[in-house]
Length: 139
Image (cartoon, rainbow, N blue to C red; front, side):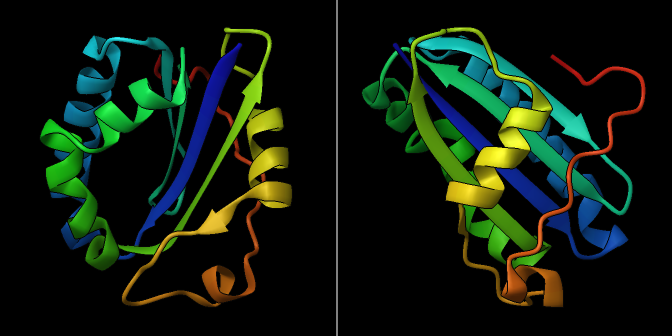
């Protein structure tokens, strides 16, 4: 059994992109090093949109990651940096990461908004287009 976590974030302005990218890469490195992490993948799309997909051995491992280190320090900044943010978690028997198509389906059907201070119309209406995968995502 594994716990899957998906986030989709859209950075609202180019001026926030450098800080966001540094934070995202450091958080991904932290996730990979956190006990209980079974897999981590990042996907960058057009229009400053970014997805994360992680698998965890249990909820305690995921929460340990969320509430510690680089990730904890960066989460409050996302409220200002992003104009769209959504998250979903679910359990599954397979410990491997699901496909991006499955991640999108779950996010659309079962996900929730994360708070942002400058929400876009798509955020307010909970419109989440499927991820556009060009080449390879960063695993």
